[in-house]
Amino acid sequence: MTLLVFWGCYWAGTTLNEWFLAVGVVIVGTLIPAIVVFRRGEGWAGLGVRRRFWVVALIVSAVLGIGSVPYLLQLTQVHGTAATPHLLANLLVLWEPLFVFGWLFGRWERAFGWLPAIVLTAAGFALQHVGSVPLTAALGFGGFAIVYAVAFATVRNLLILWPLFYPVGSAIGTLQAGHPMGWPDVLWGAGLIAVQALALGMIRRWPARPREQTARGTC
Image 1 (cartoon, one colour):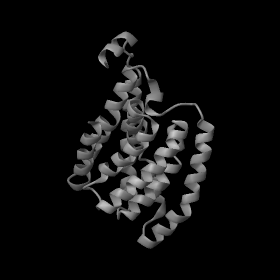
Image 2 (image 1 turned 90 degrees about the horizontal axis):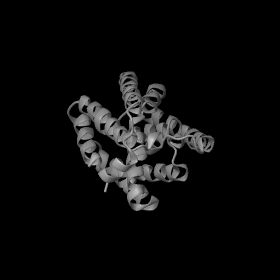
Image 3 (image 1 turned 30 degrees about the vertical axis):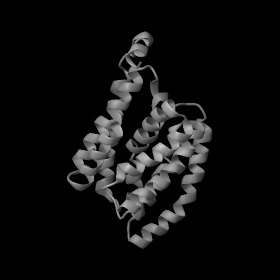
Image 4 (image 1 turned 90 degrees about the vertical axis):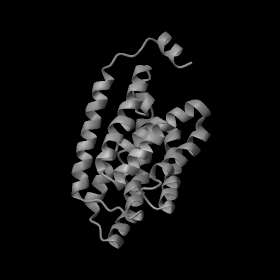
């Protein structure tokens, strides 16, 4: 359900007004997932944020991210886009890996197992972009998502995606889809990630429900 609602927000945000996307990011992509996992006592791990394997995650993320930089620079030259603001704007997109991989992948893995979760995550990532970019680009994003999901499944730690690997891949994908980003996008992203951080910090302080009550409420 959250995926379908978020798809609507994403479409409206990219075709009507960017504030639809901002509202979707804060409410559907951040508040709802955080409220669910923290109230159920899952903590940060319920969103893919954990200390386990963090060193391995960062090393793999750095290798994959840095290895893709030459291709990104080549694309920026082809499209006549300034590399620095475009990469920074994508670096500030924490909401997408948090929602798609920290939240959706985690829910699907709990329900169906890790392999179906990878497939569903890729399909969901493609669906999220349908109507906002050409269909071929949306399907290409789904291909990117398979790589991201496989990487995430190896450690269940978002550090393998963000802030090193995912932003470079996202910067490549947005250029291929014809969406170069500049300094206004950097400012917009900075404000959005600040609101996310504030929301997550506030929700983290909420007490979790007793396990017995949680169990009854999820049967």
